[in-house]
Length: 145
Image (tube, rainbow, N blue to C red; front, side):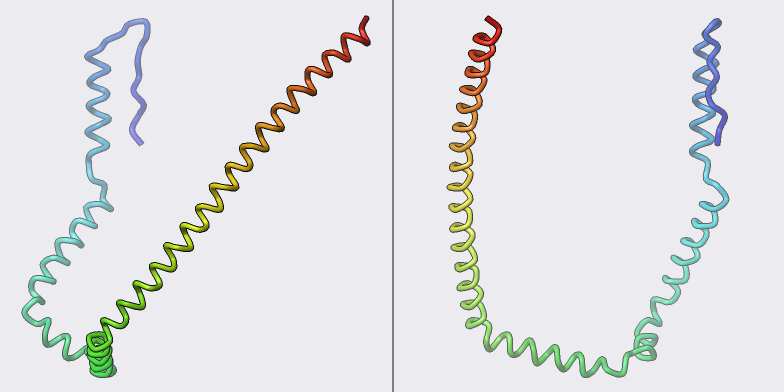
């Protein structure tokens, strides 16, 4: 960590303060040894990936999963089924969305009614509280006399 900036308040020297600030910023912006190593790793990684680019198809063939053909076939069957039954599925989704939106509207209406009811109850309680305060003051006046 860099030394803190020292300011002599008896003799304020703005040039000295600015010099200290510039030194602190320049030290902060210098890359550390660890960052230099990371930069070198990324350079080597970039070079290696560019050199390996022409060989990627061969690497994929060698690394190809044994079950990949089965996965591709299953995916194709699912895609065909989706194309054949796509319209029916869309209709079902539309029905579900309509039901969902209807239920949301019903719940929001219930909540709005409940909020309004709570507001009315709050106003009643506020009025009762004010009445109790007036009653308390009146009783205090009678007892003090």
